[in-house]
Length: 493
Image 1 (cartoon, rainbow, N blue to C red):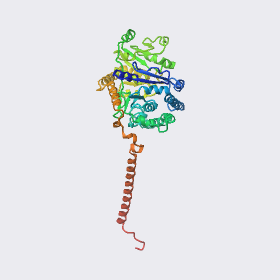
Image 2 (image 1 turned 30 degrees about the vertical axis):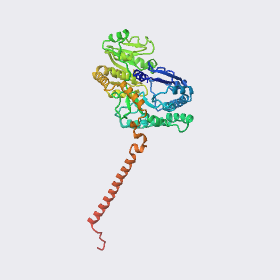
Image 3 (image 1 turned 30 degrees about the horizontal axis):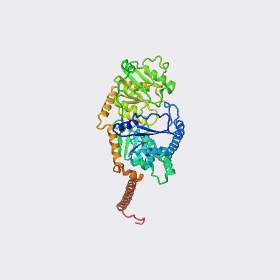
Image 4 (image 1 turned 45 degrees about the vertical axis):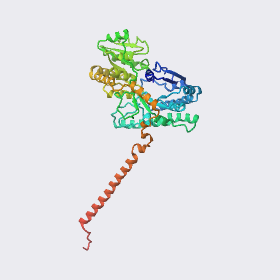
């Protein structure tokens, strides 16, 4: 959202970031230019507690009782925070005084659509910070063929076995129904309680959004059906690599064969890895003495790397600048979308170690392009999988060639994301609502949408024709047999 704000400001627009501070750890917006309106959250401790979990490097059961308990706790918190915002007269008055022409709403909940209606903002854009999600697709009327489009939080590719298609079908539809019966219904109740039962349905306000922005790159994601109003903005505002400082330059130029960077982002901390996992990773790196391994590690622990001459620990790494260096040969990453996009733009092959959320799907999407290999997060450093992946990535030139080709394709796309978002924001602001782009699919029930009301009678009619044909054939055969045999003769005859 921050890079989007700055892109619009560079195009001459005034942008305000409205930031309810729900999670005290999320204190960066990514914007250098936008005006900010920050509102302290009602229960930041509750958010911290809801998201407190064991190490992301250990196995986590997504369908466990505790996982569902945390999810419902999160929904209750979102409902309380939504009510906290819309019933705050100072907050709403300040927003109303700004007289916004357009609002861009992130996809995490639906409170923003109610706020936009209360403020009388004439146009809106719905933005996904990841690939298009199941619940957004359902609200917008976007087709989601579960036979080849994996759910956002699954670890499947677009080529699924029967059991995977079964799980995907159940999972995608379950996500949509849970969204409708939890976050949407709970936040709808906030507006119904405070502004009357005739308040517009949040699901309808979301579904009739004029334009949708998706933080994904078509060339890196799974191919899928979309609507005309779906605008891909992957790579928006990403900076070009800059010259490294002398310390990092010395590390890269001092390596014999090249450097491998390992970083798991800002949320998952390498320092919290189990000790045996860290030891196994270091032992694996030691088996590639011609390469230098640059490990983003949150603490200075020289004792841990003592004896491992080809491993360098850094508390902070200029990731984009490192990926853009010719001596950087591979990137070990958690498969967060920004990291993957930075690697794709730099043309560097990856070893992905997905930890949570959409990272598993991101990993499968990059594997599909032939630019990465995946290592199970519970096995990294504990078996031969990391060694085998490193050996393959560093010795097989196809990965680097595929990565370089993808980088070239992204850079030469006919339209840049910066150009697209500016033009569509201006278009939506000028024309307000765009019923021209609303699919009728939103108004159909499940029987009409999937033509069940047509297919079912056809099947029944086909079965009926078969049955009648069978009865006619049976009757005809019996009649012919009687004619051939002739009339039955009595004993006397």
